[in-house]
Length: 365
Ligand code: GDP
Image (cartoon, rainbow, N blue to C red; front, side, top):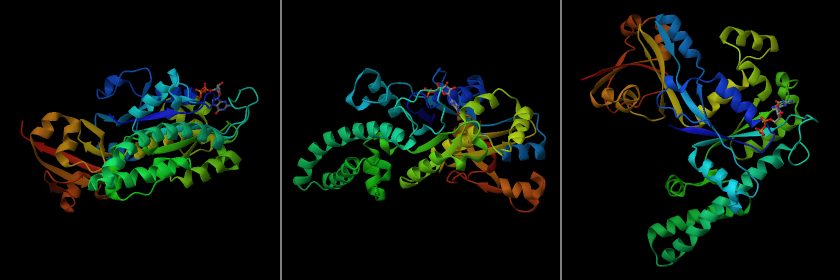
């Protein structure tokens, strides 16, 4: 399963946030595809559409979809020099598909900052630099080999050499691979290098309890936003401490707590959604009397493979998918009416499932 790694310097609030994730999260027993590992937290994906479908269908039960966060331990500074724990840090990052980078934006005299003061951009750069240095090594190893072949007019080598040069230049300027503009062909070549700084990143700006209501007043958040924009990444504002308190509450209590604070959606819920998106995941639904349920697929998945997420038999015996979009179904008010409106389509094995599709699969057993 795809996973997002949580990284950050010591004392920025990673563990607090990760605890909130595991507390709020689901049992892996309900999601057999998920890993059982203390460093992995399973979260259910908040989705208002699932609530609406539940109102509409009134099923026996409702099941959200879920995915994983991985807590990435290990020492950051000096990691690229390959020293023990630092090395572990890099190898853990290699295994995740996207990165949630927690940055400290809260000031608290009682909590030591590893570098002595709160400075989120410096913190971000400490970690990014380690990743860039590791990638630089990958690229330099490769460039030596490819350059020779390029000189012998090997077409593929010439194309790869160009990409490697572009990447090297970015790294020399301390820019991540994801910031480099590449053509489709070049992106394919770059993908083969499995670079750490090619992974999509979102920044979680951890602010204090007092600031969560109006986080834009926090000058550090503005700086993080500017920085993230320069590399095309997203920023989510959270207060890890409050999130860990919210995580202990159940649905109704949680809503009350948020209402009291005047917050529409918890930072953690925003983070979960952003990470899901960052991983290139999307959701389709099944909506029967027994169960209304959300399912996760990668963007671009075709109908039989989407069916396979439910059960391998569904994929193997796939005949057709009866599909109605969430919006059309809600507008119609019932499946029967949606059919009458001509909004329920029969789709075949080449149909690319769209986010929000409500699907009934027909299959041979
Ligand atoms: P980690 O080393 O990055 O995992 O950081 P921790 O999650 O252990 O947090 C370090 C310290 O900062 C702990 O004492 C937390 O209670 C505190 N902390 C974390 N988030 C917040 C926050 O949002 N506000 C305040 N005031 N303290 C926080």
